[in-house]
Image (cartoon, rainbow, N blue to C red; front, side):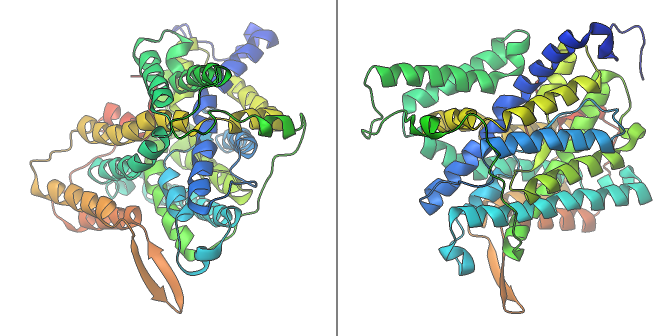
Length: 465
């Protein structure tokens, strides 16, 4: 697939180390806004549900460290061939929200940090599912595996992930609708009319500009509608300049595992879509070399390592694929430089303190776009893969997934061997969809027959259209 005359730079060392460092910084900024948004959102979930903030794990510093280390580990597993950056996965936000709001059994009296530790244990198990899929793909081939995970199953599940979080976005935005709308409008403007690098980082621009507006409002003596201060800088003054990220070793509980692990069904499809998109962008068939099994192993182990020390799940980032398209520099060394920069930044607590002052209304405005786009990407997954909804089997599968994913708001709890186990709505939907697709006649999906459709599997807003 490689074309030596396509004008691309495949060995960035020819540019000199100065330009390589600049390109690395560009990749870091491309992933930055989305990556740090995940711990901000998750911290808000636990703050609201438990009445106390997270002080260990799932912080901005831990997340940046895990993104950097996870990316380097992925490159090792992928034979240093794939120019992919691994940042925080938005797919697991619904799982974190559910764990934060668990009020039964042992979870009823847990602190926010302890609940988060169990959620991260579920992340570890989710990452290990990647290894299972990688082994199956190596043994029987990707085409046979993907027949059980067609877009008629994965698309509706992705739609449910976004819709299940809609209420959280509204609650945060309602703290100050003006700031929320500023963030939302900014993201839309840069995503639609942005040029060059600014089109790649609409969420980062939304956060930066709305935060600047919040600072101006704060300096003018304005407050939120409920009378609370728009900004509080105590966390910044208390933070030191240099320090270790506040890692937290995960814990394991069957209920938390069953909440988090099934989400891997969506993120594994996201991984396949991103590998297809990167292959198309770079002009190399990474599904064949180093192989989809190796990239899945790298992504899965990076996710498990992150969860083990209290970080969020990792996933390949479409934003950085957009940077590849923009810069035409396809050398994975540049991505590894960005990973190193992320690790260095994780050891600066003062930076994390600034991030922690983010008003919840800005988070709501960003989430307003983000959660809706997750569902919209699920719709695109169905449309671009040309799922025929005139067929009864496809309507049945999609309909059952929707009802299960949105109807079982409290999940299903049962006891096995004296241990209470809760299946969340998303887990029920995933199980029902996979079973129905397997037993109903007429499954004619063939992976690879529609490359453009395969690339639409990601559940984050893709930079490259």
